[in-house]
Length: 132
Image (cartoon, rainbow, N blue to C red; front, top):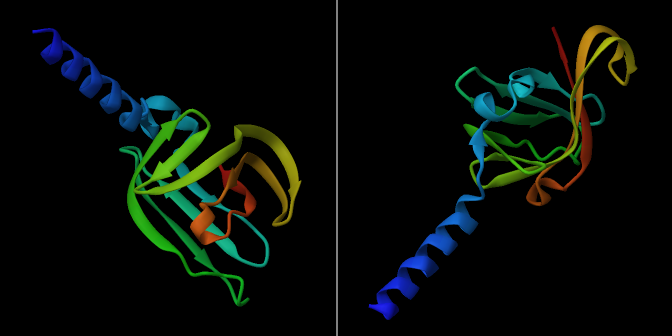
């Protein structure tokens, strides 16, 4: 009996570690929902829909641009935004500004967030913007 209880508790513990208490983005923080873009040598686009499904695309003329194109469900954990097996570290959560000077020019009624791209795609820190 004691052995069964030990195995049961071990399984529950391991399941909680691997689930990481991540929630779909629309449940955890709806400020992430929308079409985001970054400006720079490589342009990254993150699109998150109301049901947390979406995509991440990277494009550009430089050899540095890896050409990522991943679709799936976005989930949000502690300072991590996940898309399938790819993890973006949240450096700055979405924040709204009346106006903002950016690498994309001056933007009005703009949201800004900062993410570190997945390591497999270079792990660069990018600022993303969406207009309301």
